[in-house]
Length: 220
Image (cartoon, rainbow, N blue to C red):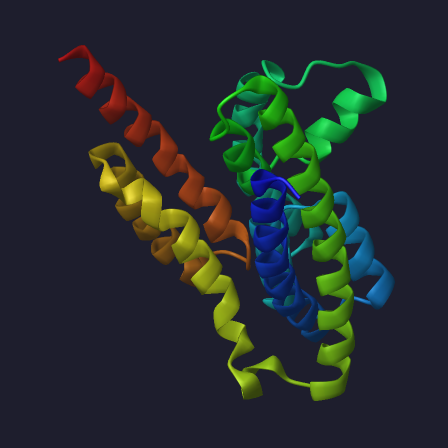
């Protein structure tokens, strides 16, 4: 097996373990097994799924859950122009590529030395990730039904841990730190006065000042 395919499989196995945590939390939040599987198969982006389940578990509305999920998934749209250069195609091929475009597949594709290997890395990583994400969600849902409350095993820490892992690479720059600090402040301020899920959406307003900071830095 080529090295890039082996690396993609290893990454997918690790992600599958995370999917089991998602399945446990989703079961604890009250989602049925079909709902968990459909979400993992069709949404297929971990941060968005964790956010939606967190909002539901906190008593938030469906609109807040969907809004939070879409807000986090929006970053995947930025990968499109990069991947379009190495993934030619139309119709179903383009739709499948769009569905598999996430952090991990983009990273695996963009580190390859040539376009052919990059495309192969994208598709194999995407197929393995999708398969193991759905299987992991299934396993997690079954485990969740068996163990009851996830707090007993400390699995409730998975959601904040996932967010921290996403945030860490972006606070190395000044605009990133502006977005992180301002977003956290807005969310904390909104918690006592707004329904569950809304603070997460309001925190997105921090993107504006962070972008302004970035433009100011580039103009210097």
